[in-house]
Length: 139
Image 1 (cartoon, helix red, strand yellow):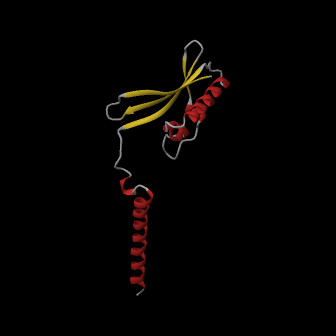
Image 2 (cartoon, one colour; image 1 turned 60 degrees about the vertical axis):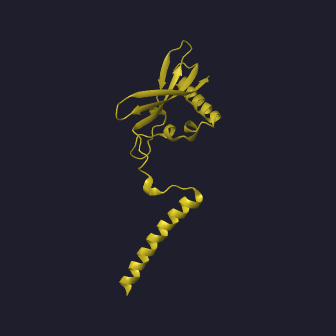
Image 3 (cartoon, helix red, strand yellow; image 1 turned 90 degrees about the vertical axis):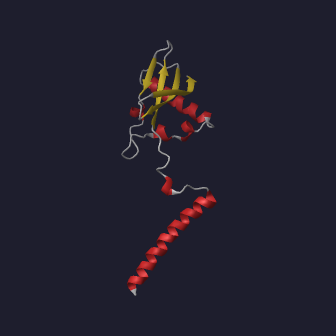
């Protein structure tokens, strides 16, 4: 009797979880968790910040030194997940972030006239590298 009750409880719990996921996906626009690996891309993307000096000299701003702590066991840091950098609608926040990096560079004796933020995309299969500048802020 107790064993049957335990089996029914486990089945009921399983159905409740699955039902909750389906209701969440159907009515609230959520994603189903069993599709989380279906959208794999063959590209690795990271952010690069470049300080452009008054003479045009380009110096990389060391983001790994500014944002030391990675997320979990990955190499993802704050700039890689910072929503204004991935969302095109918040230009003001991206400009503030670039100005922050420029001020940090000035404080560490890097000559800065402007700061350029660049997304670097590396195709894992072919090792082809593409760079796309998306913000340039004059200091």
